[in-house]
Image 1 (cartoon, rainbow, N blue to C red):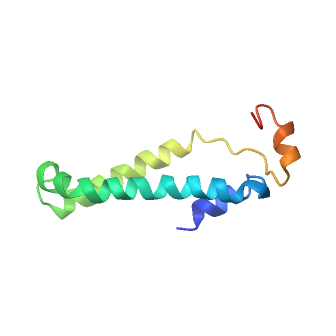
Image 2 (cartoon, rainbow, N blue to C red; image 1 turned 180 degrees about the vertical axis):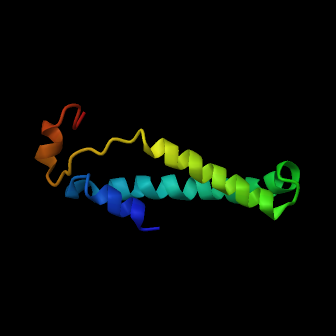
Length: 92
C-alpha cells in the first residue's frame, strides 16, 4: 500500500505533503468502498458465482490498469515550492 505514496513523494513539494497524501488516500479508499458495496452483486449476477470468473475479471482489471500506466508521464522531481511555481502551469 505504500507504493503510491512513495511515487508521489518524489514529485510534490515538501510543504504540500499533507494535502497530496490526503488526496492519494481518497483515491485509494473510495474505490475500495465502492468495490465492497458492489462486488457481491457483480459476483452473483455477472460472474455467475464462479471464482475462476472472478480471478479473470481481476486479471482484466490489472491489464487495463497496466495499459493506462503507459499514458502517465512522470514530471520532474520537485523539492521546493519555488520550483513548482517556476514550472509551466505550476501554482495556479
